[in-house]
Image 1: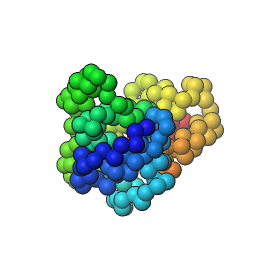
Image 2 (image 1 turned 45 degrees about the vertical axis):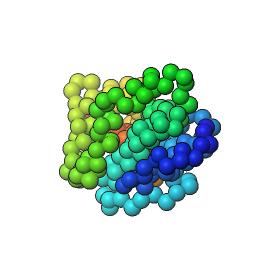
Image 3 (image 1 turned 120 degrees about the vertical axis):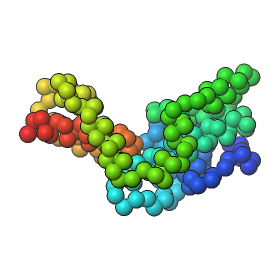
Length: 202
């Protein structure tokens, strides 16, 4: 990973995670998954105090992390680096001679990128909004294939019994829980899948 100081091009702005994210990426010796990045940050830095409601706090922490990544992706281009951002592959990459390709990848209009760079989505999102987002996840499991979809999220076969479902849920919930360095979105999806199966099978 690069050891460059990146001079003064990184603008922390309102996000306290920008510099911790950059430090974690520079220290990594391999690409990081999103939950690995969060775990690395938690191990070295004090995280900001967020909403008292757990679901809102999960949303806020995930939003701050993604905002920091997209800020860095934009700002580090001038230093000769491209930040690849995928759920399972986050990595600082040195630009090749053909830097225009990476420039285009980083700066093109992207709905996800635009969402995470607009602070109105952080400051203006209420508990009701987060609940609505969760209901949207729940609705993905409605319809005739709802149990199959939920089992797929838990990586289980359709003939899995309730004891197996419960054990698998506990394993995945522990792995993805944000307090243990997990991915907030993955945690919420696992929880919704479990609740779907709980209603259907008990």
